[in-house]
Amino acid sequence: MSEAMNASRVNRVTEFILLSFPCSREVQVFLFVLFFVSYILTLMGNGAIVCAVKLDHRLHTPMYNLLANFSFLEICYINTTVPNMLRNFLSKTKTTSFTACFLQFYFFFSMGITETFLLPLMAFDRYLAICRPLRYPTIMSSHLCVNLVVLCWVTAFLCYPVPIYLITQLPFCGPNTIDHFVCDPGPLLALSCTPAPGTELCCSILSSLIIFVTFFFVLGSYTLVLRAVLRVPSAAGRRKAFSTCGSHLAVVSLFYGTIMVMYISPTSGNAAGIQKIVTLLYSSVTPLVNPLIYSLRNKDMKAALRKIQMCTKISQSK
Image (tube, rainbow, N blue to C red; front, side, top):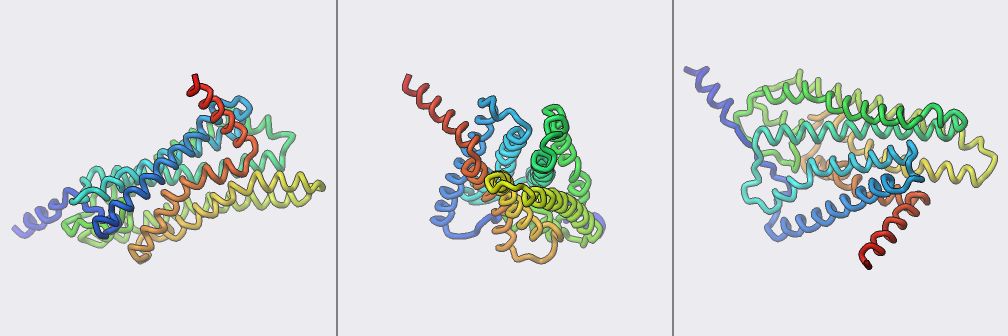
């Protein structure tokens, strides 16, 4: 009898409540407008980079193909969180089904891991271009670039199915309120009715391994790049090399700095408010500022974007 009662309690939770940012109705509407504008700007900025690379044949190089792929990833990444967050701002119940919560968890993490794989690939591309300029065209061919990008995406989407499956098997018997705007492992593990140290350790080790391996690869690549740049006799050459890599380093610093705070230990006890702010930084702010960082610091990209703008004005005038 008691086992049957326990089973019924375990199966009671069929949906979760994402609190997002609990505040007055007026503030909720203001936040909706703010994040909606940010969302549209992110889509437009990253979409412009993808279109510029696709339409301008001068940008059909591994460096810009990687940048276009990265911008496309940012579009996908922000779509895993912001639309549901916008819906929650205007919703009274703020509920999400059990399945939808874990699907968001899967795609949110898979996109994030893809980004942690693409950033080292972009660093490797800059290392070859600056440290091995004569061999760069033969090593980083278009075919190899495409294969490496596909490998990043496929590997990233294969990383988290097992940990997510383990979390779905935990007993969730209530409460079902997640003080976050996204289904994240920390809050989900905290809602489990029974402790799951093995699952927590699995998530922590996997996250730490992915973050540190990719981060040190990026760090090593740019250490070699910096050493090569400092050997360039021309000041103009050094400035060009630093300008090329500076935007990438800015993105790397913002992205890795925030995810290290969050995911080295998913249940490290960060306050809910800090979790939300840090998650916003790497899931919403980074995709928003990436187009600004890359386009404003890159002459070829600015020229391509101006060309697209002129073509759009001409077509509209007709």
